[in-house]
Amino acid sequence: MRHRWLVTGGWSRKSWWVLSPAIACVVLHAGIAAWAVVGNQGVDFSVYYLAAKALRQGVNIYTLTDADFAALARAYDVQRYAPPYPYPPLIAGIVSLLAPLPVRGALMVWNAASVLAVLVTGLLLSRGRSRRWIDPMVFGALALFGPIWTTLYAGQANNFVLLTLALYVAQWGSTMLSGCALAFGLMLKPLAAPLLVHLVWRRDWPRLIGVGVGLAGILLVSLPLTGTQSVFDYLRHVPQLGLQRLASVPVTYPPNQSLLGCLGRLLGDAPALARALWLGCSVLLCVGVALLARGTLQSHNQRFGLESGLVLITAVLVVPIGWYHHGVVAMLAIVLVWQSARARTVRAVVATAFTLIGAQGLLWHRLQGHPWLLSLGTYGLLLLYGVTAREIRRSAGEPTSAPSVS
Image (cartoon, rainbow, N blue to C red; front, top):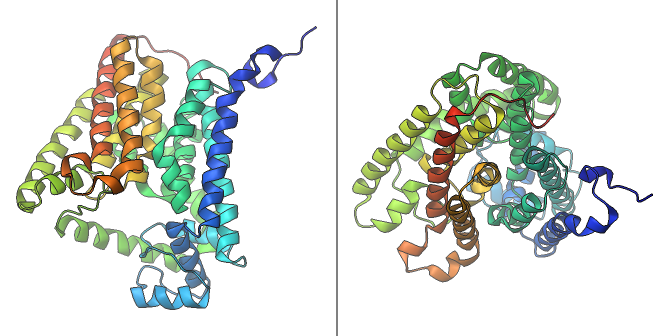
């Protein structure tokens, strides 16, 4: 009798080729992760590392100046870093566990965990898309998605956030587990904070309770790593940072793929007009999300995932600074729209958006001087917004179904 692959829901040994995208995904990402270590990259991880060193010394990591970072970098032989440290204290607390290692050794461990996070994300998304643990489309998309490459190259934390979001959607039927997954992602980076507004709008109080329980539990467990003072320092820092970004001129550095960054590049001589258009477009996008998600507490799990994906795409577009690597969160919408779409044209648009987002990360250095071509990621996100909204409208009349992921 032929043996069956346990991980593929009963496929025969002859179907081993189905595993190739998953293998390619891990190998490719491991190669990029190793390249970052060997090439002494990981500029964002280096900031985590230096902040972790400062945190262990009892320093307020949110008031560190460029001179402070330079002194820390000299003391711990860190050559490439990109201050400041604007993240919740949990990242610095976790990285403090790696602080006894030199920065390259710490980055190696961090990036290995990041590759593992992508692998687990692929398993969860595969299970939700096709009821088997390895889906070639999912792992192929993960393998080739540019923001994941950039995340590994810079040593960012976004892949861990993506994992929590995949779990958030996968555990749709368990509001407590789903909420706790979202809470952990928020404690790493608040990329998904608009999902809290989405839950309030849906009146999904049980899931919000899960978020609250998760935040309280993670905070208590992490206090030995972060200390209490760093939490208060962060809560004071966030409003100040938000006001500074709202009051500042548009950041036109090409990795900023928000609408404001895009309009700032296109209207470089008229920053006030760029800000006005950004505000107007942001209101329209948010109103669109609100109308599509209205009164959907009893909606089925596919629509819940699509709405969550739309909220995440909107967040990257409307914030003043939506860095290219933040686009990692768009992977949820890419997979779910591809699964939901019945029209080939919709899938063609998804493929086009995927290509544009990937091209942005690879080509922007060569496109300097061509403002219209420095926002390919923004254009891709806008296309994803459109097709995701379309699929949500189309699914509005579908009956409630049990969650496809347990």
